[in-house]
Amino acid sequence: MEKKDIDWANLGFGYLPTDKRFVTNFKNGEWEEGQLVEDDTVTISECACVLQYAQTCFEGLKAYTTEQGKIVVFRPDLNGQRMEDSCKRLEMPVYPKEKFVDAVIKTVQANAAYVPPFGSGATLYVRPYMFGSNAVIGVSPADEYQFRVFTTPVGPYFKGGAKPIYIRVSDFDRAAPHGTGHIKAGLNYAMSLHAIVDAHDKGFAENMYLDPATRTKVEETGGANFIFVTKDNKVVTPKSDSILPSITRRSIIYVAKEYLGLEVEEREVYFDEVKDFAECGLCGTAAVISPVGKINDHGTDICFPSGMDEMGPITKKLYDTLTGIQMGRIDAPEGWIQEIPVE
Image (cartoon, rainbow, N blue to C red; front, side, top):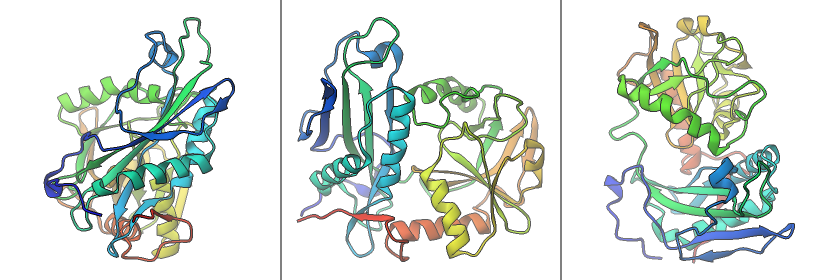
């Protein structure tokens, strides 16, 4: 297989259409078989439920070329399970996780020429998503849905390495108590757009959202979970019913315990204890771990001992171990790596 003529080393983190995408429709109470198509456009009614009432959810994962030259995806079954959970909460028909994984494999396989080579720093981003497609004017769930998977090659989230970022405590809420913060609904991200634009305008890379009920506990950012490291090298992650269950975070917790022998706590993290941590990071699919150097709390900076120059030592070990597993340099736990057969 010959790779596409792309300047892999200078790819940004943006959308570049690839050759094929997977499409299937839900009509008359059941899913069609689905197929790979070349058309990258979507045609729906002007009154489609997704346009009127934001009935949509999505996932994000990556395909990599390993050190051994294999194309793999990382824990797609967990993405499939999370989409099942999102669909149930949004009154959308479940697309079974087994079919989800199969659709991901087929889409990556069909676009294998776009999977960047090992060592380029780039990956193939995979975006499965679903939306209510038929006309709905009364406030109710749609009757018809479309599930799609597209891919796009992307460069590293951070050009020149993962330098620590400067974030702020936000006065906005990301999710409501008993709301949709625990699922990957499009509407959650729409709600965060004003807050992130405002943060960028004021010189911050991201927002730290506190729990909406008491505003005393750390939740997450607009698109990533928090991890903290104590001064005695314990890894701590916030626990809340309104935090999205990040696949990257769950993987980091396993790596910390089983590969690095670190103690891990998943618990409520009160904001007033953040100043006592040694390291802080944001974890998610795009960057794996983004180190945080300092947090602005309404004009007062909380500075972590790890500083603004590089990742803290424990965060770096977590990052290096997890990316080593993803890239085939380190043996993976059983079931974590799905190889994509390519002719």
